[in-house]
Image (spheres, rainbow, N blue to C red):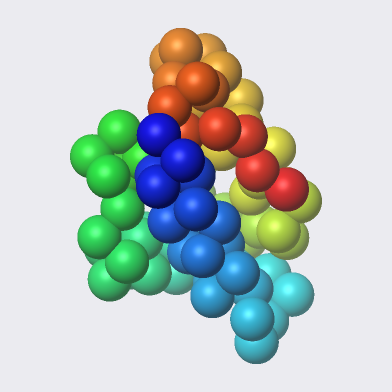
Length: 78
């Protein structure tokens, strides 16, 4: 759904608005505040612990989205 893709994009924009990197915990907390769809939340909460640049986080998200067969619904991100 386009709405889910846009919501994820807004979440990513907000997550990296002030900092060049974000931790997994930062990503999860912000995803909860953005009330991401359940499939997207499952992907975010399954991220390995660490600190991510936007590109690194998108690589992790995209890999998980594709592996779960959710790319049509959630899209891929950069």
